[in-house]
Image 1: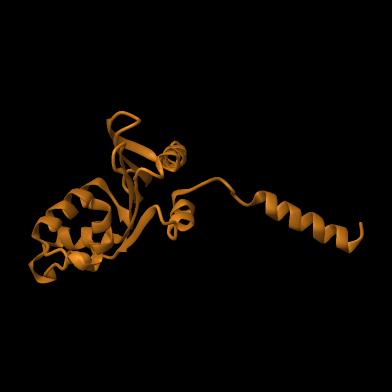
Image 2: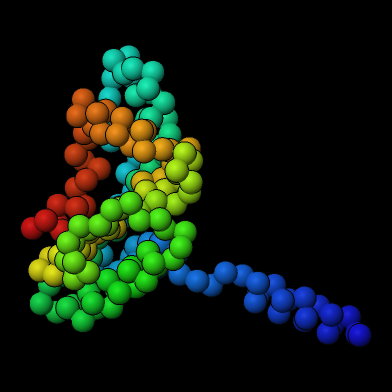
Length: 177
């Protein structure tokens, strides 16, 4: 075989081996600049917590949290068809077997779900997906390292003690109007 054919064959094998399936990460990247969406990255600093007042368990839970990505679709009278398309895309992504559903509320047209990626003791990502046919939908990805359900419950207790920096959440205010 000539060298040029060998290179072409290797290159085509490389292209076919790449995973082209949709993921939430790709979905976030593709829609960050879309005018129908509000995108927000939230760091742990939003909690504005006095570290000296935290227990060891709370500090461990806080350290397992890296960041949170929020992507929200604001429904209006002009984008109803686009809303249905985008909601179907998200539902399709969340049906992938890597997203293990913890709980679901409501129906497919309106409700919320909580899923995770990873094993029970080493969760990499929690995904909250909520949609309402009158207002739109939101996807929240909580990313971390070695998170577990106990850490999440502990984080909720830390949230209660925190002085949340609302400046980081300003972009979401336009969605609530």
